[in-house]
Image (cartoon, helix red, strand yellow):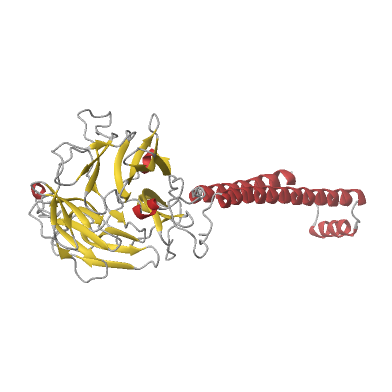
Length: 447
């Protein structure tokens, strides 16, 4: 048996031996080779990740909205020659107003957590598209907002607190957004449960018509009481005045159209109310129409889309022909003259002058596009001002009708930003994949 002294002597002898030069060189070579493979793998992985991230960033930037390019001073305003379906990822105005607007388009607005209703404004000078950041907006549906004829203002219903049990997001007032300054003027209505809104109309560039009743119950009340409301009361609000002035209308009266300082009212029959003088003119003939008639600036003629006994597959009587007739007293009920070639009209938007009307029409078959055309009521000769996909709907209240009197402007198609969640997800996947590859590579390189 080896003693402790003998074992220590053996170890001392072994420690004095010099290592085999061949064995040391081989180990050093293997170490250098491992380091080279590790560096090459790391460099290749980093380069591939950087290339992928650069590609993702490039695609994202190429589809980004970019900055709003302001129109040069004195640039003409008008409707863009074509309007487009807006991207849900467009930015908002964020305190930077677009200036005079040509149109507003209800659209879904995407967020990191989902989507919500929004309103896109289209600039009448640069053609830029932005979501309008309207504080306190109740909702962004079809009848929630209306653009003024001059394109300067957007009126919308607002939500807020009620005195008693509220409905969900109750309407409690109205606001007007100035698209040139970004300022917002509000009018709040005292309400127990919220307002049952009728509609919003602009009588001119600064006078807003609003109608509403009072909801009779809120969510805390019995279900059978939900949905009930009083008859709407109509007001004219000159923006900037403290309080709207109530219109002298019968209970249950309905304001159907407004423009050029006049209101088309339905009570027992149709009449035109001049807001400036308070005078009324009975409307004869009373049109059988699928849309509300539109009076001209002088209040002497009406234009309307004819009614029809045959509905289309969507259940509507539109599109149809357009009739023109004197307001009163010439002509018996039902009289009127068809505008030549006016078939395919969905709505009459406005009179652009005493002999021309602007029409919202379908384009060809199968009607997947729509246009706004200015048409001569005598000859039917028409000029297209703007067009776009049928889903846009160039309805009254969405278009700055004063601009239809001017030549259209050339404007580029708006950008379609990439979903930032996709960019973030792809970038994260690239980094995770790169880290995983490096771990596996280093293990293999060591072997």
